[in-house]
Length: 50
Image 1 (tube, rainbow, N blue to C red):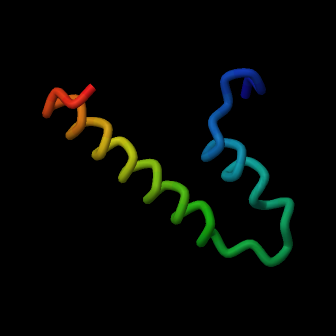
Image 2 (cartoon, rainbow, N blue to C red):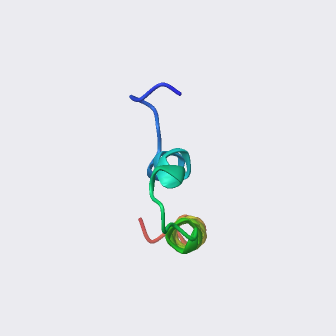
């Protein structure tokens, strides 16, 4: 993947196998935070607070 346009989530998924004790919990946490940020962004834009 092009390193310039790579997201944090993509980077973690691609490099997770490099870490012996990786369980995927961090990837799931980051995905949850990303989704929550998108929902907040949508709601703020919908309400016209910006």
